[in-house]
Length: 433
Ligand code: PLP
Image 1 (cartoon, rainbow, N blue to C red):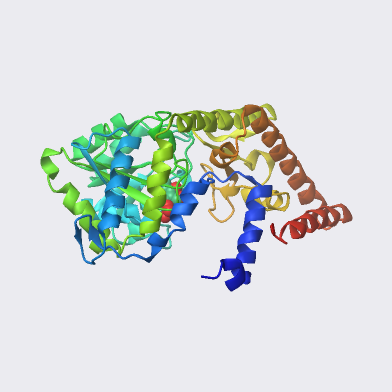
Image 2: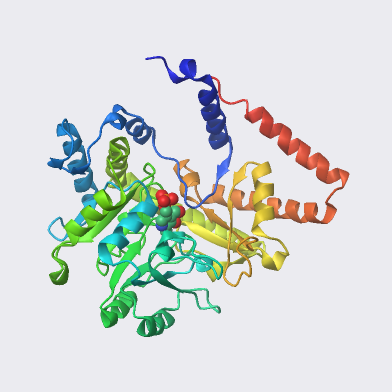
């Protein structure tokens, strides 16, 4: 019963240092957010002790009365948060993460070595959407399925839906995946649905990044057109780290989709659900259905637009020239920089971002851009005027990177790096009180 600080001060100290980093830094990673205290309490609860393989009412372990109540509540809240009719849609809330949700969904929909199509990783798609390189099949989604990526129109950097359609006519996929990790615009689900219908293919939307914006109606809903929708719960949705799979229940040709999805999650891809995390999802979904979350989602987008606008005013190049959602893809190639360099400098000054490929990049190792997201700063109540100041910090970080690149090895550079490192080590003593 000893508290962590007493029983394991080493781990407690690491948590303190990370707490300090999160409290004192500017978090601009588009896939991250700051979840609520209530969600963290649920996630850190006693529910972590319980095994509950199976479905509510049909478990492989005894003692699941309250776990059943929790899982059913979470399913109900998930459907409510996305405004879905329980007669038409069901949901599995057991996936451990977005990647396992996707693999389970593919397992439910297609057979091994079937053909799938998703947005290519260099164009903003996720690893799990079928990524491979010329040398290697990188993701399980390309190891176990035949994958053909689709891409962006190079002149607009928008999804080229006509090209997707013509590729699908040739490749004849059984599944088309839409959704992305780095795409600053909304999706045309209706167009992809037409393509799928022409091939008899399934349409799956992975809304991991935008699910909080979809739930609040700030991005268009995939539910009208897609057969299955997967999401993580920890990005714009602001919950704990996990995944969910929504599936249609009203399809003539897929009466058993519910069974297939549930069996794909367990026993095909996972074992016992993480009930503490499911409790965190339930609480996050309660928050996501509240009016204040709608205000939050609107502010996330307003902040992203404000940063984008300010960066353009500074003369920078943004992919698609701006954003409709929570993220910005900033092309640094015209400034003679790589994303990795700017990421490093930002790290030194307490701004957390990530290097990211931008359309037309030659190498994934040295991507030419960075990805910014506003979910976390908006959780800390920043508004547009603050976001513009954040953009000015980013501008200064780029100027500093350019100076460092030019002056490499000089005294000025060494002094700057020393100041940043000293400040960092002061912070890394952690939060004691
Ligand atoms: N799908 C998309 C679109 C993502 O961006 C991500 C993660 O960033 C995932 C799936 C995977 O989620 P996880 O990291 O929880 O496995």
